Picture 1 (cartoon, helix red, strand yellow):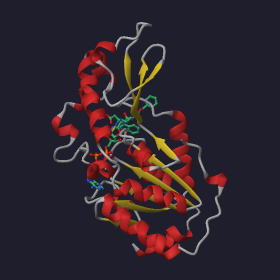
Picture 2: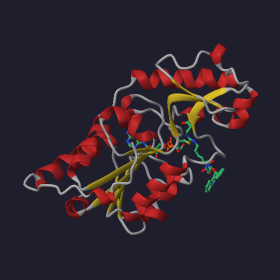
Picture 3: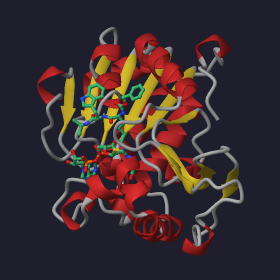
Picture 4: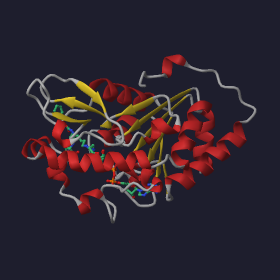
Length: 257
Ligand code: BV8
């Protein structure tokens, strides 16, 4: 961690990519873990346009359950550590693959939701949008008045990522001095490329209790949970930079919410 701390102290721009592992300590299941969603559900049928077309009610039942769990869950120390780090570096971008809104609730400002969120439903035909609360979308309201179907505003397999979010994430990863890759199996593209191809000019640190396909290629692998490891990292970073005032560097900020 010493070298990572040194790099963070010198960094002008930090980019972070997170996956479902950062929300595990908030009680939300990951995809590939032991009780992962892809063990307990036929995800190909649920998280795909084909699955939705085949059985929209079943897909909404699953997403309404996940949405309710997201609203019940609270951001954990890992989410809060990243929100704190953002305030202490000149430029910071966090791209998440998660749709649980926990980074937003933890206070992260420059957030790119690469795979969308469960805060909104949108019509497949006229693109009408509707905010979702904890109850999600009642299955009797899936049909939209225009004849289209209301679907979750998230990215399914085979679908393109939101163009602006992707472009900003790729730019931020390419310009970053330090890249943190937290709680992702790094197997889903193009998001995983942010931690490898786009991060090739950066010092890359992975935070994950397990090895992943990118572990051999990163500069630093911190084998631990996001909550514990990020808390230690940010606490030590703050202690070593308490005297430092931070020039905000607007040119490095890549838009985002
Ligand atoms: C697309 C939203 C094309 C829905 C999700 C090469 C290039 C481009 C595409 C492809 C390619 N090869 C294959 C593809 C297609 C595909 C893909 O990547 N397939 C994979 C399976 C091979 N990609 C796509 O389809 C993408 N779209 O390519 O479109 C296109 C282009 C232009 C025009 C039209 C089309 C879209 C992919 C998005 C799919 N949507 N989610 C929903 O949530 O329901 S994917 C979903 O799984 C997540 O969003 C995430 O992205 C992905 C991986 O999950 P992780 O978050 O990493 O979770 P996982 O369980 O796998 O791992 C958890 C990790 O946490 C583990 O490592 C574990 O050790 C760790 N962990 C556990 N506890 C902790 C912890 N870490 C820290 N602390 C802890 N406590």
